[in-house]
Image (tube, rainbow, N blue to C red; front, side, top):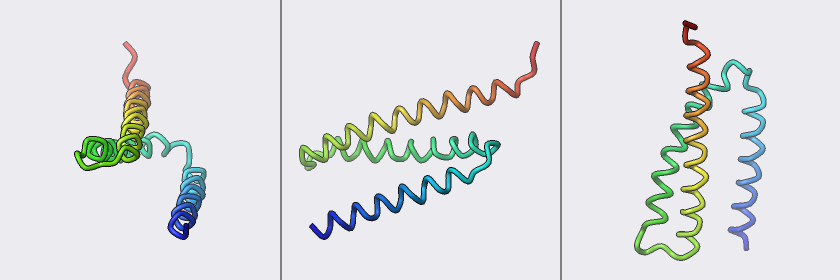
Length: 94
């Protein structure tokens, strides 16, 4: 029970700190920040694939791994779409 409370406390603290950091970023830096987050999501995707496909993982670990794969893949694809849209804004019009 103590481990659960500690993990929950860390999760809530990380959520609060993450929200405060992102809220303070000026709009001009959001897209470069998203590109960096996209790279981190790629690393998360690899870790989730390893977790879900490990032969000794429990059913819970496999389910959480599949959920992490889905969410990280959505984040990676969305990040590429936003970055592509931003780059199109800077191309010269013909």
